[in-house]
Length: 203
Image 1 (cartoon, rainbow, N blue to C red):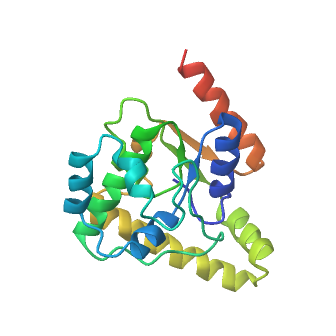
Image 2 (cartoon, rainbow, N blue to C red):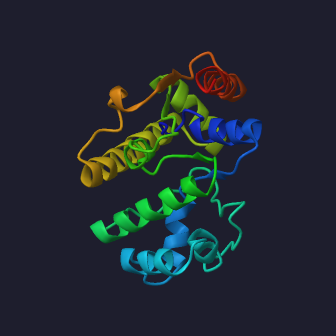
């Protein structure tokens, strides 16, 4: 999980590259929307009919390759889920991704979805307001006031999303194995910290 403007998505991509595993992000929602009428029942049917249901499912999606993932440009936010059914379907897909092999997943309430997964690591990437504002100003070429508005809007949207579907707060540090402040760190530094933690705790 990460705060907008913290660089967390980039950290996730760099970590995935260091680990040699796929990186998956919020474009999952885009894929779900482009796959018409996706339901939990449809997924369960696939799982019952096919041992390798994940490959079958990804063949239906726009990218059609389970080793990669359809991504969107940084800063674009998917539409907010509107039904419990869609949230449940998303959980099924996320769990299918994880069961298919090691990977890095950005956001999507992963701390909740994978809380019972035997081999997961939950990380929260955050930064000070000043650092977030400066990063967004630089990345999006916007004013300080516009950057602050983006932070306020996205923070509210993400917290409402998590609270609505999980009953939890994404800021609850008890939900994470690692909490990293990006102040004074580069994305490469943070990716290396997580990588080292994984190496030490997986022995």
